[in-house]
Amino acid sequence: MNGLKGISKKKLLDMYRMLTKIRGVQLMIEKLYHLDEMKTPVHLCLGQEAVSVGVCANLKREDFLFSNHRGHGHYLAKGGNLNFMIAELYCKETGCSKGRGGSMHLIDTSVGLMGSSSIVSGGIPLAVGAALTTLLKRENRISVVFFGDGASEEGVLYESMNFAALKKLPVIFICENNFYSVCSHISAREPDSKIYMRPKAFNIPSKRINGVDVLEVYLKAREAINYTRSGKGPFFIEARTYRWRGHAGQGDEQKSKYRKMDEWRRWIKLDPISKYEKRLLKSNILSEKLKQNINRQIEYDIDKAFEFGQKSPLPKKRDIMNYLYG
Image 1 (cartoon, one colour):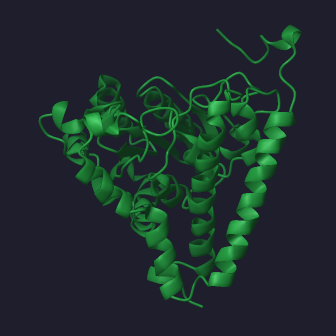
Image 2 (cartoon, rainbow, N blue to C red; image 1 turned 135 degrees about the vertical axis):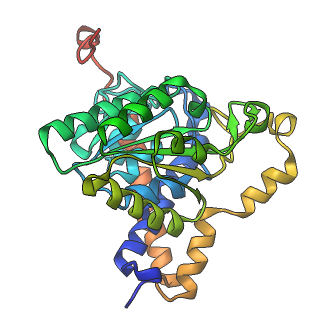
């Protein structure tokens, strides 16, 4: 059966599974976080799932990926191990960062995730450096970095874009514009919020896309990735999306104090998963039975991952300084 917009049925269903998986994991973290067993700050990506899924569905395992503090979706969409990610939230030795990094410092080089950083815009120059390495070594891989609208205000982004353009580096900049830097709306921070226009100063092609439509993200990211992989240099994507929860932790008790509730409700209605699900059902790509089977398997995998994380051992005191460099 042909898929939507020339995308195979398998790819469409794989993206649905990943969207559902990331959403389920975020909800379970939120459900259990109050128990204070996850000894790490968490930044949930509820509402933003379509960006990581649509982009990473185009990437190869060997492609480099750099993430930020809100990186659970990036890690899983790149093929990361769910058990290892949850164990990392519990700071266990079996975690993807051996329990030393926590939620904001996930790393798994086996799937190309070269690290995530709690420093705003911290991953951007690293992604450019990795792209320079691949260029010098003549490797057929690209480097992708995710960052938020707050990071678009940091000078290192512009230094990095300038260098990437000069050297025609195989790097793609993905700005997940969710409109808020902690509690500050972008309109209170920037006189012109057209982030996608700024790379044009460096002759870097750029696009603004609908970040809650996984099909649009997938197709636009595919264009960018093909462009960069062909040796033409960097590309910039501004994906407009929305985080449903607060900056960090569970829920968002303060949302009515810094968000307009009409705005919040409008974005909630644009749920990237429910809209995509309805589209797949209407096109007979997804059936109710298959949907139930997918959800059942994902719920099982999530339960087992949290059981794995909770039961895994903590790092031994004598080994606590292992894997640390300074």
